[in-house]
Amino acid sequence: MQIIEEKKITLGFSSAEDGDLSFYLMPDDQISQVWKNIPQIKSLSLKEPAFVQQVHRDEILNLQTAGSFLRGTADAVYTRLLDQPVGVFSADCLPLIIFSEKACAAVHAGWRGTLLDIAGKTVMKFVANGCPADSLKAFIGPCIGQCCLEMGEEVFEEFQAYDQSYSDFFQKREKWHLNLRELNRYQLERAGVMPEKILVDSACTFCLEKEFFSFRRQKRRNGSMFSFVVRR
Ligand SMILES: [Zn+2]
Image 1 (cartoon, rainbow, N blue to C red):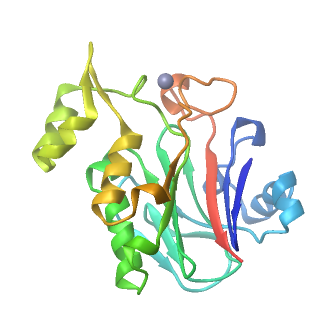
Image 2 (image 1 turned 90 degrees about the vertical axis):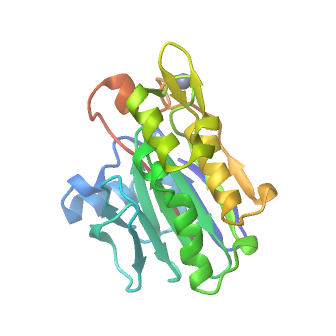
């Protein structure tokens, strides 16, 4: 578990060594147990996280009541609550954390969510709630790199039809290769987040076999990483 602390905000990105953190598949008592057994979580004494059933769309849930566990269907969780971790699952998709001094959000951006600009829409959620885009910071966690994210012609065309500028983030090799990280960075900047306030982890979940679960490498669901943020 990689922990990043900034003032009163704590971010966490799990890796394969933390085991499968697919909380959405676990009964409540098991979630508590698994969560509290992660050494970094234990030492920070963080409460159990809230999360959603992810469906590769662009819905953003505004979490207004404290408490853990499954909170419906969405692909981003935004909250102004204190001491309430919110998180997303991934195993190649891009985990994106956005925060300010007043609110925080965890975003699941696979290629479908990215096509729908979930990063930009989450920034707008902050703005609509009184946090200007230039006050936000963002952290793009480990995801599948452009080296390994192969796409068919039809996906490339879908992106191009949605927004002409998106074709800049594809490279043609034998197949099309999408740079998910840079496209999300572009969407954050376009929504007003300042470039110097966006941090990017450049690890590829597909290439780094020992460190990460990868849906595409393993060709099946084999485990999920969990990425979260909490304001304390
Ligand atoms: Zn790779």
